[in-house]
Image (cartoon, rainbow, N blue to C red; front, side):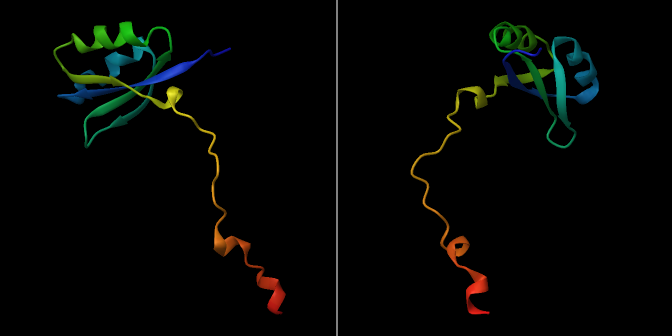
Length: 91
C-alpha cells in the first residue's frame, strides 16, 4: 500500500538527465518546453531528496509541492445562480 506521497518539481538545465531521476521516485510528468520534472516520493523522504537532487549540476532548482498541506474542503460556497434555474418549468 502506498503511504502519503508528495510531489517535487525539479527545474533542469537540460532534459538529458531526466531519466536518471527515476531512481529517486515516480516520475509523473516531464515538460520538454519548460524543462521541469514532476517527481512523487514518500512524504517523510521529501526534504532529504530535495537536498540531494539540488546538489546535482544539471538541476536549477528543486521545490516541494504544497498540495498535501492545502485544505481541500471548502466552506460557505455560494451556489451558482445559473444552476438553480429550472429549465423545464417553462415548457
